[in-house]
Amino acid sequence: MSKTIKFVSTAVILFSLLGAVSCSKSPSRSTAGTDVSLSLQFPAVIQKLNLVDAVELVIHAEDMDSIQLTLPVVKGGVETTLDVPPGSDRIFEMTAADSNGREIYFGADTVTISQGLDQSVHIQMKPLLLMLKVSPGYQEITVGSSGSIDIYILEVDSLFGAAFRIYYDPSKLRLDAASRGGFLGDQILWSPYFMENYLAIGLSRLRPETGAVGVSGSGILATIDFTVLSAGIIPITITVESDLALIDPNGEPVDRFDELALDGATIVGRGVE
Image (cartoon, helix red, strand yellow):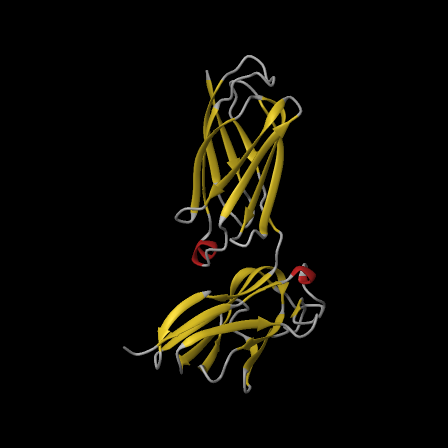
């Protein structure tokens, strides 16, 4: 006898886990596990930024030994096979973390795995971290050549306006231009200011005549073009100067602003050979 268990995520990380599970007589600690195959694929923006480095899956219940696996992300996804004893109140917990060990997403569900029945486990992966990120995080460019970086916002809820600064070493890098990204839409206020050693960027959606709405999710706020002037390591730092740097339509800080992560980048200037 066999059954299929289907895990369905309904949030930012979209994936499905399909398993063929054989029947067992009892869900005791001595019960042999049943094979379940796991497969998940992350959305394109998560893959592009290499944001998630590993996924931890924990399955536990009072009448079974806990199952804990740390799964590496390969080619934007995860695949593995594990054994799960059938029984009631099986708690499935999933955590996705980045290469620094920061927990980015978490989801859980409690289910009863019944013998001989098809069923679904719904795991809603909720974001744990709000982030401004410079991408790519590392690149090597020959002196005299040009490149670009994107400023992403990740997992924001109802963003209406943003203000941040990009710091750099002007003796090694020249910022040539800044253009707005598409995350907040086409009709926005856009204010880049080039200073001696930093670029200050402010952007905001326009307020319609009736009400104002923000944008949720992940996307690009700005793209910055530059030219490498000299060889060496060139750190790029992103900062915010106040708690009103990321605001919702009511002019208040967006949710999870207190947990905002700021990820800069490194450019390595290579001498001309």
